[in-house]
Image (cartoon, rainbow over all chains, first blue to last red; front, side):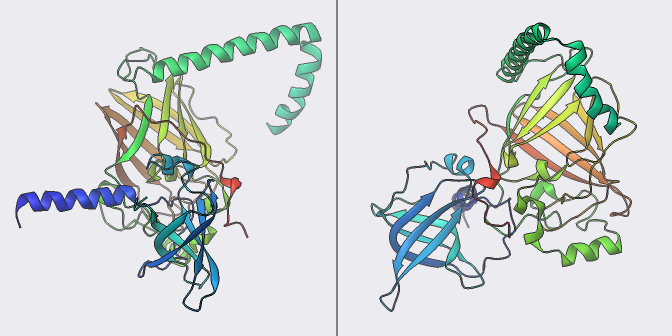
Length: 122
Length: 265
């Protein structure tokens, strides 16, 4: 592989590392790191808080039923350094979020990526 | 010792400080606090100059905002000192020199029991190895103060040569004293309680935990190492290295753990 490609790949890798949410406050054993889930819906609540911020999204499932998914992400400090603000999401915003779901089946995930209606990814 | 503290405080106020003197004293304290704060921030804004933190006044200035480098894998499985990335790997072996009982405790630990999940602080070196939160170092004559964003935690490192107190009540952060060896700040800490974890997966320790940390500034990089010793947990001392990068434009954010903690059952 050309060195240039290697450097580009490395850059992508490093940027991904820097992007990922921050979890030093508690263990991560409750989440399934082997699989990633993606849900689409509208924001119900955005909690900008320590030790972790949470975003709740109302999703219509395959059966046509509405269910709420919670996405756990970083503290205000870590999110601010990634360009987030406390008013980044508001109720009613359409979003698509991906992450590692809880092993126990509850509808929460460790948020890895969230996309807004205009295509922006955070 | 504890009796002296409790009874002494009451007598102190009523006998030595009548109201007029208390007011004057309060004003003096305010002025003093203002002066100290101003001095701290004045120094933190000039990271490249010597601050006079040691007796000779020639110590390098460690003041500033620092963040771990290189970027760590965040959002992954919980940090463990057993499989650390890059420079966090222990020097002498990839395996921490656990005593058998300590290793058994470690393997059976439940991450959800971590003190930090209950908003209690990590100690040394857990705080220094916290991967995703910056720290601020404020260097003043006789003291180096480390303010960690993680858990809003403050460490006081005394560099005035006072030594460790003879009778230490165990605390989360222990008692830290520092001295300069050339350009390196060497920090010796004892007096820990046995409640904290050394990493995120359940590395417990005893009250005999003893750490020796070395801080060395190389331009915009802070080189750090910690040697961990605890005869009730490890068969021999072992060392972890880590680098931090200067982040002069960053600020330390608030982190009020109890605000929205879901882990307390």
